[in-house]
Length: 126
Image (cartoon, rainbow, N blue to C red):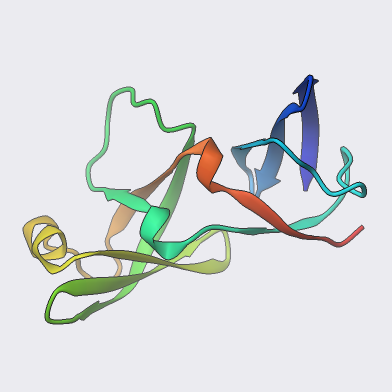
C-alpha cells in the first residue's frame, strides 16, 4: 500500500508498506491513480535484487527487506535464488560464484537490498 508520496517538480519519492516493511521508490512518472492509501502491485527485475547474509551496518540502498531462502538453483554461470518475504515469493539472479561464496541454503535468513530507483509500480489496484 502507498503510505506517502513526496514530490518536487517531476520527481516523486513514493513510500510503501510491504508486509510491515517500509519501502521507497524514486520515479519521474506516476500512474494517475497512485495516491496515499492505494493498494499496488510492485515489480523489480530479479537481477536488481542484491543479497546479504549476517548483514549489519549502513548502506546506501534504501530498501532492506528481510527474507528467507526458499530454494537455490545453480546454473553453469548464474544462480537463481527463490526467496520468501512478507508472504510473497521473489527471485534474485546472481552469479554462480557469488551464490557459492555466500553458501546460501534453504531456510537461511538474508536481507534483500534494493535501490529506490529499481522498484516500480506495475499496477494500481485501488
